[in-house]
Image (tube, rainbow, N blue to C red; front, side, top):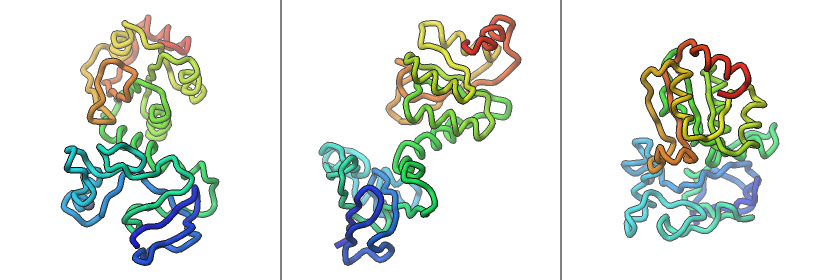
Length: 230
Ligand SMILES: [Zn+2]
């Protein structure tokens, strides 16, 4: 067997071919399944793993808990999870923190981190986050960690409130919000980076990151910023 069974926080069973894990190990399992030794994996493109990719549908690497387009591998939200190629598909975690401090390593925290990397915010630039769901919220925390100037947009008041509780300027999703973002950066050039390849710029509720060249806001924008909205 090349699998382990995982119950939320601990290995409860380990297959006979698994060499690096033992029952009781504390691990996080990423949602995409890859082999670690094919051409794509060696290039760091595990989501296109040539061993597990679903060629029948022209998809990338197999995923837990998804449809036949990605291999129909059970799990993802399950109480127990059988993990193929387990020696490669795990992240061993320490013992000192609670489960919820490690849980997001499985998906959305790395997604957010990589999105910020792709945004490639220049020195003195501004990071605009369009869509403040879980990934967007993580993006804002990561941007704060990097000490970027940040602006955030979402139509849901509770999401904006969460961002504002961390000192982030927010705005509602309106027809004029993109113009307002430009005003806040002196209408200088900007680049758009997306956290997922199929993400579209419009509608803005998708997970989009935008980097803008920063500046001293013009008078009206500064006034709006002072009132904690654009
Ligand atoms: Zn591979």
